[in-house]
Amino acid sequence: MIHEELQKLERLAVQVSKKAEALTAENEQLRARLSALEYQIQEKEQEIHHFKNKIKISNIVDNRPVNSEDSAEMSDLINNYIQEIDHLITYLSE
Image 1 (tube, rainbow, N blue to C red):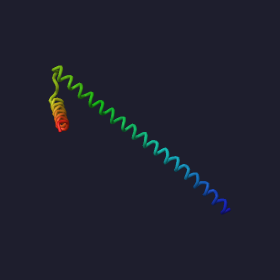
Image 2: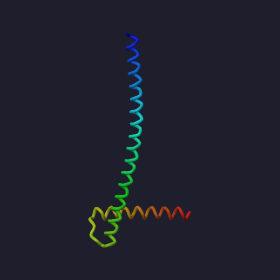
Image 3: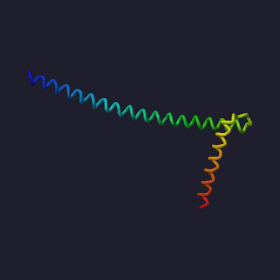
Image 4: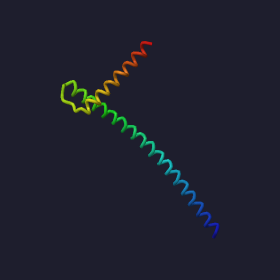
């Protein structure tokens, strides 16, 4: 009787162990998928940001009114581009 109970417990322990392994594998797969989806979201957010900048630049080029916040942001962006170009010119000159 005790031997039968031990065998049942061993079978249950094996089943629990297999289930835990399966859940661990599934968890790893879900984490990998989540990571991939988060990366895709970051890429899409960057694309949206670049697209918004293109629209702002287009509005400036077309001489459309742009609100002051967008104008300041674009001014900062252009200044950053200019600084980056200056760094590249300095680097290439060396």
